[in-house]
Structures are given as C-alpha cells and as structure tokens.
Length: 522
Image (cartoon, rainbow, N blue to C red; front, side, top):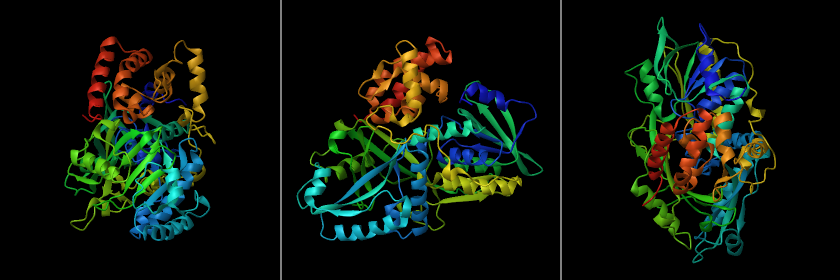
C-alpha cells in the first residue's frame, strides 16, 4: 500500500471500526511502536498532530551511537542495549545508517591512554555488531584525517567508530514500512481527547488539521508516544497527574565542509561545562553541537538561545584553525529531548539518564518517554508488550530485529545526492525522465531536483512546503537561505500535485520563508 493521506482518512472513517491499538505521536518512538505492533498482528493506527518526525526526531545530532558518555557514567546496560540496536539499525537500513569514524584530539598526555582503554571496552561490548577498532593515533596521522585541528600542543588522538544517519528520512521510511505491513498512519491529525467506557480508555477524539472535522476512534488500547508532549496526553486521562518529562534543548549549527573537510568527525568529550561537542560530516556539510539546556515548556518549533550559539562557536573555535563565525553558519536548529524526569531534585539535564520508561495508568493509557533514536526498536518492542497486557490481545513474537526498512539497499554511493532514498532513488530518476522538467535542479548546491517534490507528495505524504524542505529533503537544516530561495518553486509543484490554488501557494511560501528566517543567524 502507498502512503496516501486520503486513503488513510477513508480507512479511519469506516463505520463501527475498532483498532487493536492507536498510537499517538509520529516521531521515532511512535513510528517504531506502530511498526512493532502491526508486524505482531495488531490492527494499528498512528496519529501525528503535525508532520511525521516534526519535533525531536528530525533535530538530532544525526548519530546512531552506543553512548560513549554513558559508558563514562557507568551506565553499562544502556550502552550494551544501544550498541546492539546500533548494529541492527545499520543492518536493517544500510542506505540511511553508515559507519562514522570519530577522532578525539589529545592536547594532554593522559587523553590517549585513557580513551584508548575506555573505547576498547566499548568495542568489546559491541561484539560482532562492532563497526571498527579504537586505536591511538599519532599527531601526524590525526592531522592527516582532520587537517583543520589546531596543531599547538596536539599530541595525537584516539579514533573510534559509531554510526551516522539521516533521522527524518529514517522516520519516513519507517512509516512507509508500517503502511506496507498493513498499518494506517495520518499526519496533521491532532488527538484532542481520550474517550472512556466504564473508567477505561476506549479510544481517542481527533481533529483533522486539513478539513477541521472531528473523528471519534475506537481502540482496545492507546499508546502515548508524543515525546516532549506526553504530559499533555496524560492529563487528558488524569488531570492531576505529575509531569513525568523533563525537557532539555539541544542546539546544532551547520557549517560548510571546509571546517572539517574529510570524512572523519571530531568528538570533544568534555567541554568547559561538562558537555560533549561533536562536529559530524552530514550531506556534504558539518553538523556541530550539541547544547544541553533545561526548558520549562515544550514547543513544536523551539528557538536556539544566543548563549547556546555562542557556546558552540566559541568551543569549536578553540579546536579548529579557522574559527567559525556567525556568518559561516548555514543553518541553526534546536531540538527538545524528552528526558524521563528524575525523582531527585537538582539534577542537571546532562546527568539524567537517556534510558526510557513505560507507564500504564489506571485507565489503561500506556505512555513511553525518554530514550533516543538508537534504541527506538527496543523501546517499541517493550511498549507493545505492555499494550498486549492491557488489551489482552494475543500477539505474535517480535520480528523487527531482522526486518528490512523501506528503501533497503546495500552499498549505496554516498556521492549520489539521492543515496538516502535507497532503492527508491532509481524510481525517482525514472520519474524525472518520464515527466517533463522534473529532472531539473531546484538547488544544484543541495542536489535537489523537482522530481523529489513530486515523489514526496505521491509516496511520502508530504502536505506542505515545510514537509518537503525540512524533512523529505533536508534543505532547511543544510542551508536555510537556499531553502527559502527555492520555496516558491516547491510550492508550485506541490500545489499541482495536491490540487491547491495559487492562494494556497502564496500562503505556503510566506509561511515557509517566515519559518526559515528562524534558522538563519544574522
């Protein structure tokens, strides 16, 4: 089945229909849970209030990692789980997850022996799913791979291996896999209430963001996988519930490749305030981050704080021969992390475990919170196990450990601008040949052709210019100004595909260009 929104709406509107499970939230945890549920025999519906992966799940550091920092904290069980899941992500989506070599530069005598020892343990824990051996590097070899490092007092470095990926593309491919296995997924469908029968949750009330229509949906069980917004759904069930999420903001700056010109990434394990800083190659740019700042409220479009931007620029400037300036930043993006709230007081967000937690309310609402992209599949397996207990639905054994994700293609050419589509890249190129002008570039610099917009509308449920430029392609995050420039052409193509008029086009362009300004540093 193809991801067509109109078909999904029709499916939901069928009379007297009851779903085995309704999942609220279309980010990593929701999409993972949806795929887990449907492949275990449950009739599954996923509802997302905005677009799939709109929030946290499209704004990560783009790493699939075991968690070197968690190893330093002594959280061995989380590291083991993440290392296993890292290997499975690469196995199941090789077109999106690739090996990434990191170098920790050494400016003190103890850095090389300390991190070589620790990272050797990291490799050992990964076992057969390991990506490579950690080794100490000489100064000469370190500079060969990262020639832009400041040479003064450099003693060499330590190389280790983790994974790198495209987060929102992974999410879209997860959604396609879910639909292909018989699931129903709808974006722009906001859950506004929980329905109950005899004190137990019996479904949800939702508003279609496009038509404005309210739909009441019956379900044997409801899973709350809304990330930083889980407390909002919990309070629909039990208004006096305590908040279970602590919100932390992470900011990333995107720079040209010249700052880290080779395929190696930089990892600074301890900055002045104890955070980790990465500079990671991504789509021919470099993502530098991240910060870790506590936020009081959750929002769909978080804004980077000036202090976060200054921190990243200043820290990167202490390690790179060319210190990045504000004018070098192609895009700045902020993401909110849903951390499971600690019971103790005064804990800093960077000290809170990235592990996940699952709660079941008296009325039967199941909530999953915490975790990270790398462990999404394990989280999904556990939350569906919890759902089966509430619904007493006899489910099959999990098969997602060895389930190929849509687009699966081994040995993709990373120099191909369409590589992250995997097996779909050939279909997009065929579409570009079949239909007039679709092979033309929208942006040569970002490698985006017109066919990608049409493909996003027909096969990936893209409904807005933002959907296309932020998540189906990554233009907004890679170069906000360039994405703003091509927005009018994208709107024209999208309007034609979705059957909208010139007024819709103009409105979309205005909305998108206003949004893009938030990603630009002045």
